[in-house]
Amino acid sequence: MAEPNDIPAVPDDAEETQVVHHTSQRKKRRKDQPEMELQLTSMIDVIFQLLIYFVITANFMIDEGTIKATMPGQSAPPKEIQTPDPPVYIDLVSADDGVTYSILVDQRAVPGGASELHGYLAAQLASNRIEKDSDIQIRPQGRVRWQHVVNVFNACTRADLEKVGFATPN
Image (cartoon, rainbow, N blue to C red; front, top):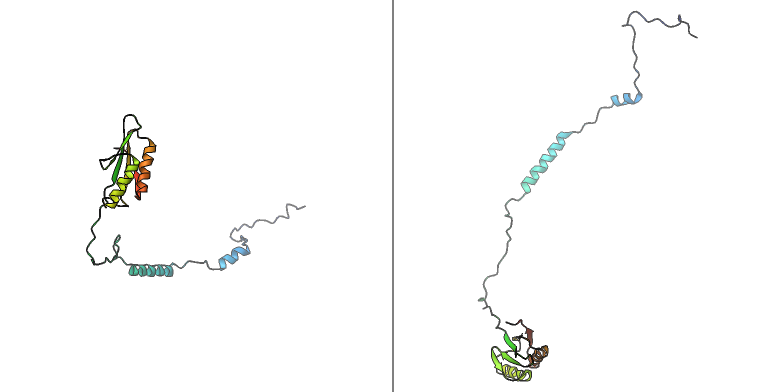
């Protein structure tokens, strides 16, 4: 055991005492190496050179929204626009009883039924009053039976008319 006399006495002079601080080897190595710095001067020079390059090479002369097109010269006179011929309307008008009906082709009465309509349309084709590709519209009026409408359609196709369709009644 240590005796009270064994403890070294503190010197009266505080200036004479040295305080020793311990420094690790890692800290010593860090202090020895210079810190790495980013050299911004050369990077800024490169950025300015790129900026100048893009400003010089940019083309600001092209207008937005314009398209260069070469239009052909007028080599032939313009063609007249042909308006389509008005359709030929075949109206089926029923009598009050719903069984009998009459046929009107462009507001002209055709006597008889669908069989006489076939002869009438064939005569119109032969005399060139209507053409094979004329637009034919069948308009059933009132309470005409569908069988009569189908018979009129069949008469049109037997007459070799190519464009036969159905229209709504007036």
